[in-house]
Image (cartoon, rainbow, N blue to C red; front, side):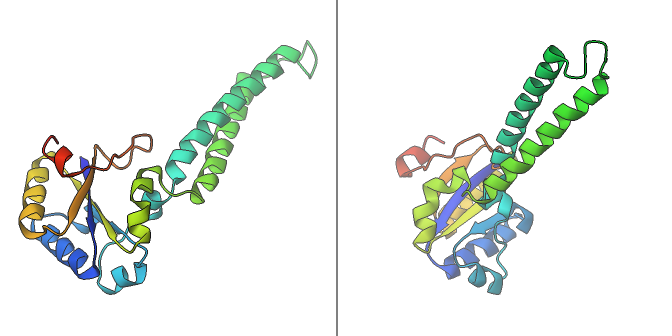
Length: 187
């Protein structure tokens, strides 16, 4: 599944794109619009984006979980080495596993909380456009739909600029490069 990014300049144009995408079989679940005009999207019944797309909760949550896991492993290593309960007390392996699990979950929670305050890294390239009042349309397509969607967008919506293609939006560690007219012919 790919995520294709389009920029439109007006709410009317975004509504037309949404309607035409529905006609070619793209359901609301696979169509999300990011805009600073959330009220306009809601009034026009255009499916807007969610927090997983606009904020860095997932990416920072994974980073926090990795740091929590590392911290937990270092912590139990220190407990095993220094034996704070005495040399004869044998701590069950389950206790160590629970401690590492708790540290990992705490790290994921903290990372997620940090991600709430951050704009999604994939959207940073489009931040100025969204701030200027444009509408970023994310269209998730399967391989068999991609050519149909691209063709329909070229034929019916010349005003909608294709600005990016991602292998899938959900992978938080990939980046999206802005594409221009010259790079579109190669993708």
